[in-house]
Image (cartoon, rainbow, N blue to C red; front, side, top):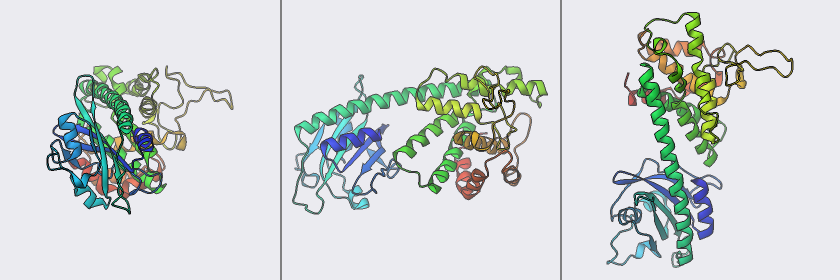
Length: 382
């Protein structure tokens, strides 16, 4: 989506662009770029992500979604009284940007459903008397990119639907794998990743893409439990050593689900599903294995690798989700245990820094503890 905005803006000479997604009777700022507001090379998916625009005649984008018609305005501040829509000046007031020309195209699928709006802006800049309207050729260009954006949205929604069904399957099999637990693990993971990225100055479109991949992968972390027997999943007691070995296979079973999936989302999900039970000190599982469960051979020694992965051999996202999963599991009631108090959970996380968990991620967890607490309150459910 960021690439669509970037390339389309270059072709139509727009300062700014937004992809709105329709949610009921409103439009959400899903992706937004503005070269006059942002630092070079840094675009914002989240600057307005909490803001909603009503699907109504009170704004150009709202009218575009409501009427399913292209809107091309030379000067947003000089609309004729007969125009059926208005220009909402509140965003200019908040940002200091001065909108002049606007073009908006509905994102309409083959069923004539409006999924959102693609909108581009030009500013009057330092010369408010200068007007650079969008041309008829620009309309064709925007229509082309609107078609591309619509396809991306539909594919993303299909992916989300499939993911939700996979999660529901796991939830039906495992009483502990509730939707509330899944949402909390995903939300905790994003809080931790946001701080990890902030400390490294990692931002912009690349950061947003990685964040989306982590969100989906975190939700799928235990999807492999659909391949574990009900007798184990619903057992009210602790497992025997043999039962534990069987349960540990859920990591490999889950990773196999993504073998034939070529997308980066699937690669990230496979990475997290396979590795989120590894431990920083190398005592986790499943270790260095093929996706059929066989251990791998160490190319340096020619010997079978029987240990767990250690330290940074464990992928970052798996380390993050592993921490988030343990925090929530300890804090929640299970068939075999009562929830731990917050003090007990925090002590355990501190004690396991450098053993179970990446020490830096533990430091980040405590630095963002207030946000972690807010997530738990927002997703109470078990």
